[in-house]
Image 1 (cartoon, rainbow, N blue to C red):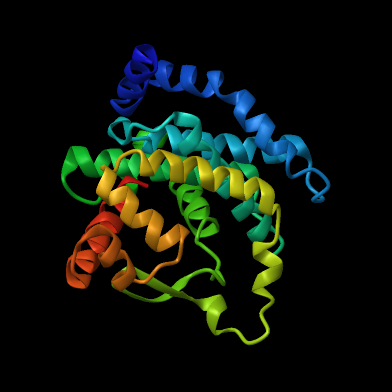
Image 2: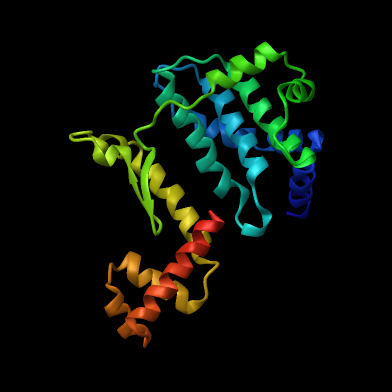
Length: 245
């Protein structure tokens, strides 16, 4: 664990060899996830490459303070990257090279923003990525997100309304039914990790509210609290857990 933490820290500081070591050690995880998407009309090796991009994103974004196993964090990120590719690929065909360049540009801009304290120019991005201005423009345009049916169109107090919720007869059930058992396993892994961060009272509140579907008034009675106290504590817990995800 100490070696892993050291590699993550070095990778976040820009050490390419540390990042490459982390990628190499987790390729088996990417291959295992890729196998789930066989018979989707795409070459497994192509999906593996997309999964590797997800792995690199997971490495770059992983926060050691979360106290999560890396695989718990990485599996949903890698899976999501492949799902987005499969969802969007039928609408807009983007070559692997363009996608890789787009990610390289994204990382360079992020690094330059930190170093310069401002948005970098195209010339500065070009120098950092060793890509021509034409290649940068092409990759940037190609990577613009297609409007998604899962795009939030309203958000308040932590509740989101997605575009798909407003589409009559959208068949959302067909989307969410895909590989339910595997999704349930992944979700349970994350839930168990997050609940482990709570104290006994907080965990009991969440279990009563979201696993036993009890009202705030019922929870207040069991925890010897007022309904207002339950409401405030619940919001505080959910905000903290959301920050940890």
